[in-house]
Image (tube, rainbow, N blue to C red; front, top):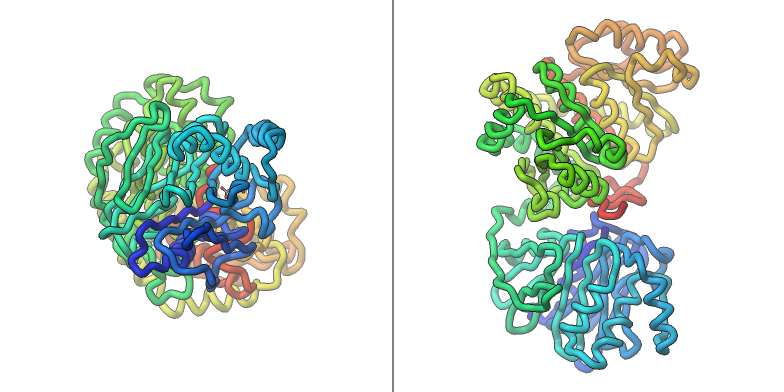
Length: 587
Ligand code: GLU
């Protein structure tokens, strides 16, 4: 759950400074602390601190080789000492790590008996000392590979070795990618770190290691310790994908990018959608799974399928196991994940595979574990999503699955037209009048501690997503309910002035939702309608376009923007909400 970035042969001989800059692009992966190590003359020098990188600078000396880390702490508090990199006793080996070493206690006890001295509380530090121990009798590559084989859990490690002047990295479960620039070599947990320099990359598979030296990059199989052929790929990502491009935050940039990324889904994946359509028509069961935002995408898709007369189930990945016994060979499991590295989703997928299911990965980032596990990949093409809070990846996943639901009902062309039209309508929606209205609404709600949301049918998953955006970005308690649930207990929470969002569409349940709104209003609640129509029940209306079942896209985008403005107004960092990391690669 951390960011890793290393450079060999830095072209300006400022490897530490450039690693720090690249880490800023990965900060979404963890921001409890950061640290950089550099090989400088006769030693490894380290600079590490708690807190976000933000505008951080480092006084580390010049050098050609550096390796750094942003941490999302799992073992050991958020302190400077626990920040990575961690050194061995000789201070010639620096280690950074993504994951959890499940057996670190027993390794540590053994190493202490052998005289190793520990300075941090992390699980990571054992790796540095174990490599040191093994390197007494083996080459550094062997020492790293053998150490890695001893570690239990999902891990990626990167080692800066002073003697050999190399960076050695191993992957099992946590992402790693190498980039090959002109004479410069890069190692990172995600491409944006080095996209400025190169888009020629290799995504490591589990069980693979790379050694980056001044003369190039070598790939190894960790088990056999034998060298393998490195087959490179060129990504079509552009530098501006990893820059803010004049927007104050990535979150706002990515919200606006949806005007293009949603319609883009109509021009990709057609072959895969046709193939899946055949299977669904041939009687395959559908299970949709994901975590957080992706689980709401799964739930919304269940409604889309139902609208088209197709049965499906939506199960949050972390609640998947009790239901896995119903999976058979004629089951399609749609695993939805922005990163393709979400640990809970991967566990569900592995279980489904064991039971013979066909896996469909609905992903945004490329080269992930989920992509490799899948039989079919629906890559939604939204481009790098840097803000921790998901926006464009979510809407592209939802749009892709909506298109599939229309294809199954033989209405694919109609579906594509509707999604293309949605792009234009959303462009008109995000006009200054709406934005000012949202900013005013955010100002009025900024000091609230609680707010509630209701919606029915398709607008129910929309309220879940809308509420999550508010919680993640502004830290206000926003609780979503199915409109029908309200009178069964929750209505006790409504007091005079309690803000309550009512998400609605011009559909057959509109009147029922308005009745629920009026029940809240009768108890003094302040009703904020997010809907394509006016109503006496609404104290405030944020008017969205009438797009039939696709109205929820507009309703959700209102929630994304409102969350953003509330977050900014309350002084939160919209790109990096507290306690969160983008890809949740731990259970
Ligand atoms: N388990 C390690 C620690 O807590 C690494 C966490 C991470 O992936 O950032 O320091």
